[in-house]
Image 1 (cartoon, helix red, strand yellow):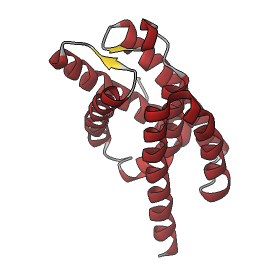
Image 2 (tube, rainbow, N blue to C red):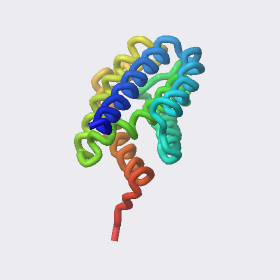
Image 3 (cartoon, one colour):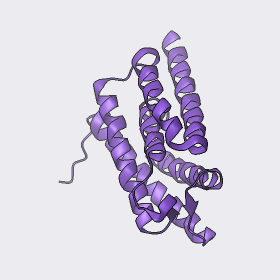
Length: 177
């Protein structure tokens, strides 16, 4: 019973911290990112300790997120300040915090890959749509194109995040033979 309570506590703390850090980064950009990173490290060192593999996963998610956002900017789906294609520090920070959330949250849907992929599509569209309304990042002026491309892109990202999770944290290797 206490294991279940700890899991729920960890999930709640991780989810709340992700939302708080998302809001801080979106509203206050790089200034907030400089505070969010050490707080995230403290949370996942002392309150909800992550294993070495989970830290590596979080860093891998961050790298994947940088590539993902760079791709979205290159394709014109998102527009960063100054029309650059590299995401700003605060957006990269959100990916890092997201990477620390997944090892806790994904355990709920680890055997439901399709559900995780669909939820990734929905969550990504909502996150980028809301974020673009309150941050310096904009979406492509063709709203429907942007929504469709974000949904497809985020479902692909969900698939990659799920596969990466299985490879790094569960050592499940898919056989192609």
